[in-house]
Length: 476
Image (cartoon, rainbow, N blue to C red; front, top):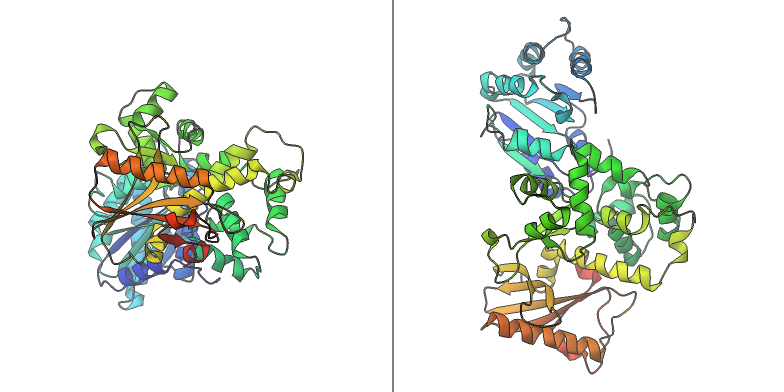
């Protein structure tokens, strides 16, 4: 088996659950291509007492056939089940025999692509309910792990199920994309000699998604890779966008409409604004779509200083790097130039996009920023702020509100070299700080933190920054 990159927290969780001495039902969920199956099969070294994978788009009879074939691989000799209750009874018979031979060792069962088994009117969830509640949960050595690409199904039907599985899931693990550090580790395992700026740029295009990162040919430049993956005649990732959402949601068009609206509004929108732009009702259905997208790590929900959450003031912002890149440069463009990305290197178009993407990198690496500011042991709250009064719509994307009566107002700046503050930028930052202080009436001290790739050049305007965070800090 290949070595697991990163995932220290998740490996620790699995190890702890394995040693609990009681029956465990673990639900693992996360975005497609994030490495759920790899984590489980690698951690358990493919040594299961039973494992089965659902057929994406399969019919009930095909799913039952796949389940029966898996039973046979593990020694079951009974007839093919026609119903899910029969299938789980066969599984129980198989496992009871295996557990007698295990002499107290864990009996590990893995269901991959679990949502696929739940075809219309199949009775699969009810059968799983009964299997767990009537037998498996009473076996102290039993360990069940389930996962699947359809994250919204996992959350709604297993983790938050209000039927027989309500409160029965013993643990859930949300597997998130790699951090910058984990991405660097992953690429080094592929013999990459790229500098950190290239790794950062790869992250801003592909995100910390292991599957996409594995497609990179590190013997070539990042620019050559992006041309090959997105713009060449046989670009492997040109069709990934549609597949991505279809694999996650039964009605992907609803989700893709929300994603498209958010991609056109870089700073994000409230639920009410999303409803208005889509001409749909601002009700529970929209809330469910937004919650599903959050669980899949496509969007984030954040609060704005001075706005109460229950007044629908929360902002929803698109955060998935692959989606952002695809919609900006690939979708509907019908580009025929196989070297498109190479030809726009260092142009205002590309640099502006990198700047926006870098802001999102910072927002997904807040723990690293707090550590660089020596605030990891201080109670903090992070939020955004938008002016209600100023004519220019002053806005701050990241404010770190500290329990030690201080605030850090963060300015995020992407550059290929040290960032040079200009007089105009100095005035903008000063204006934002003053407007924020006046409108919020804060009594706390305010420090400006510049989060840039390579720090800032010293000049007459650089003194406005009390704290500097650079790319090296983000990779810690």
